[in-house]
Length: 432
Image (cartoon, rainbow, N blue to C red):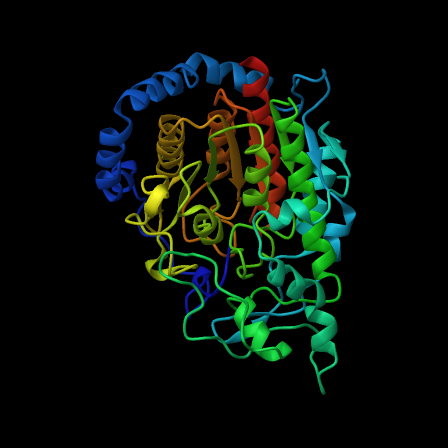
């Protein structure tokens, strides 16, 4: 997902002169691969065998024939994959987005989710409005004081003299995230202006009159989908919007308010001892990483555009591998600008191998379409074909799998690649 780093001072990044090969990706993570081999040698061999078995070329040809109609059986019946989405998620209507010193029309709009919901219904997915599971599953991840802030922020902000159309910060503390990513205490400041700076990491997540309801409903979609898998489904999808992977325990940023993938992982932990979250959005999921950085029971893996000159800038580097009990349970694969389809798919293969070697029993996949070359925030050279390959790759993983929607801001690209990914995922699941 996005922010100032998605576009340079002159606009969308310059043209790509040459594609980046798979070898350039592998070199950036050699040190971590060695560590994984030392820690998980036996499991890594098993993971490799499983992955090879489920990505044979003949299987891929079968997927190509079956892909198109999005239909897959789960353990509880013979209907299509359950997809959870609430119309309340459309109530977040951001009015402004600051980028490169200019206020522009927001990229994260209700149209994104509406387009995907309409297309998935047309293609045969069953879309269910999630039940309200309450605030408790959300508080497993997020601080109570942060949730109280989100719920009341717009009403408090609107009482300011000459308040603008939505709440955004104009001041930030010197340190907004601690080096080990642990949660921060309740802020000493009690006024809404100071609290906006404490709880909001940037200018990309304005809070309007419908923001809390939309974010809460988005989290409920993730909870419902995760609950379905916890209760026996092999796969499910949460069409989350607003997205979530930049949301910390106590901070919103990068279009994200509640970390849907993290909330879902905690629901899965009620049944599964080890869970993996794998993220192929073009922006590093810094919030997801922070939430589990000291945990040994949730593996977090991400491949994303190199953050040295790209959002989120301050996290997503290859040497961030976890702390304390979580040491070795975090894997980042930064992709250089211009990385192509092969580099993207190779990075996902590395994430999957690491997750299997970790011993994951269930999987959360954070899906983002913004690596596509047509996305306004992309600096990669990724085509439609990469997402069909990713769909087959993730569909072949022999684990209960939850798909969670994250980023993607070109409506034209989303309309093509989202259904392609899901159809190939479902085709692979039906054949496995």
